[in-house]
Image (cartoon, rainbow, N blue to C red; front, top):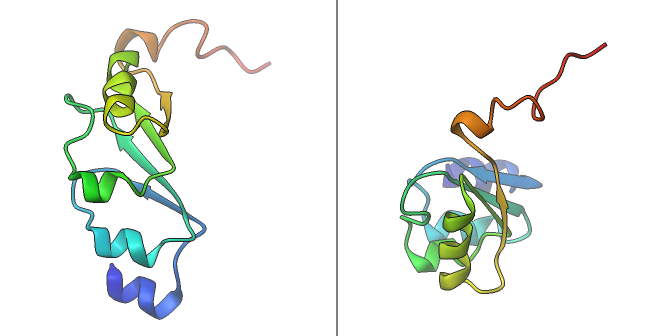
Length: 96
């Protein structure tokens, strides 16, 4: 991944889905908007030196967003519901 970034430049938006990201990748993408999808429990299972680089952390529930803000008070979060809330009638509707 780092070789690709070095060869072609950092992306405008970097989305991380999972645990396998290093601070070296985050530093190489310093100008990218960085999003972490944290639907696991606990909310942040990555080291602080990595998580501090994100611009937005997506969580699965408000309690996870609260855990993120406890670790990074100024971090932006957004709840992306999973489970029954994800398939609620207000989430999806027929497209006429």
